[in-house]
Image 1 (cartoon, protein in one colour):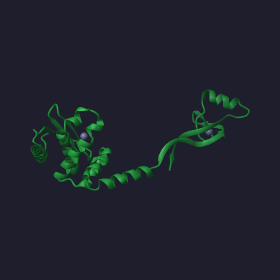
Image 2 (image 1 turned 180 degrees about the vertical axis):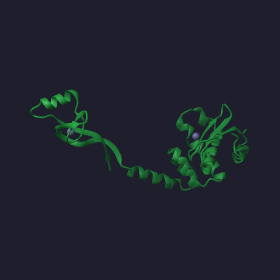
Image 3 (image 1 turned 90 degrees about the horizontal axis):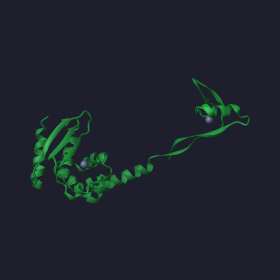
Image 4 (image 1 turned 45 degrees about the vertical axis):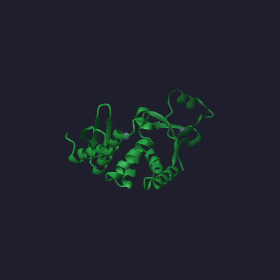
Length: 201
Ligand SMILES: [Zn+2]
Ligand SMILES: [Zn+2]
């Protein structure tokens, strides 16, 4: 489909400011609120799949235009880290500010895609980035971590019918095959423990 007039005008303005030839814009729709984009420098194309949120469309286009403009060294290395590294975000956050995206929106939308953008934004002095980074770090600390652990402590297995199977009365694990014969054949009883993923606070 033909890109909307605002998108063509924005790409032209950004590239004119930077003194580079604008890319060919490819524009499609997607059903989610958020947009996705790609910048293919070799092919001369910036492609956007536009979601329903107009602000996110604008930020996505500016993000891809930042790839279009970003210093070539940030691309040549080819690593993901360099692709969205400090040099890239220096260009991107400047474009967001210059083209009408409030710092708070830029931080929220950009960090929703790339967490590491907060760290770069803070280093670049984007207003509110230091606070956003601190809030993000403290929420990481507060989030319960999951770990492997004991769900039901060691116990003696007693089995009961469970449809086609036999399962442990205490923890509900299925007891099958050789283990079932062992449980039935043992006078002293067979013991086991139920392990699994447990929440840790
Ligand atoms: Zn990107
Ligand atoms: Zn059990």
